[in-house]
Amino acid sequence: MKTDFEKYKLIHDFMYPIVGLKSWITENCYNNVFKEDWNVLMEVIKKIEAFTDNENCSMYNFKQESVFVEIIDNHTSETIVELDADTKREAAYNAVVEFIEWQDKNSII
Image (cartoon, rainbow, N blue to C red; front, side):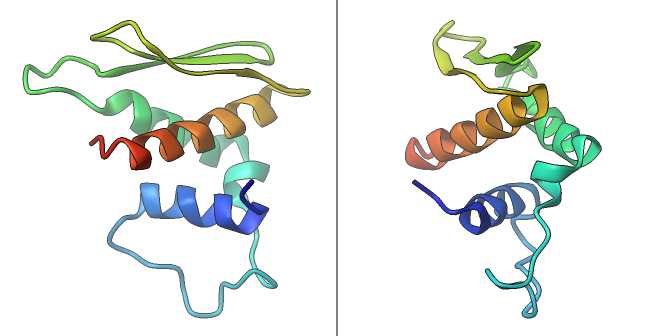
């Protein structure tokens, strides 16, 4: 299980692959804006939904109903992420983390 800081770094690296963390951002000194700010988290979700294949078709569908989230591969209809949580934001955040871990593991995108 990843620490909160590891999840922050995972999402940061996904969103800003060329820009590393500033040297002063450490496990003891950081603010997980992806977890705390709905608007920032929505930018991550938009990036996931913006991935397209060679034919410019959307690759992933992020579906959320209240505290339940699914991320589906639009080509195979495979459910990549399926989870729920106590709050809508927590569910979205956890789904984003799980998707990025899946993407890293499968060398997708």
